[in-house]
Length: 76
Image (tube, rainbow, N blue to C red; front, side, top):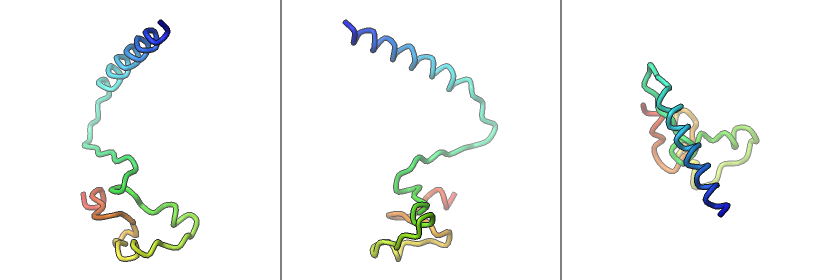
């Protein structure tokens, strides 16, 4: 019985978040990239001075960003 209330509460919050998300008007094109290998900037290595793993030393770009492949937000 309690799980029905939890599901209903989640549905209410989901609908409320949709209303808030739709009310935001961006006047510029924006791209958000949340922390996967396409947005790894190597901040941990820069902050703590840790040595780079051997397989990543040849992947450093001109902006000193690390990743498994091309870091697409850097090329946009």
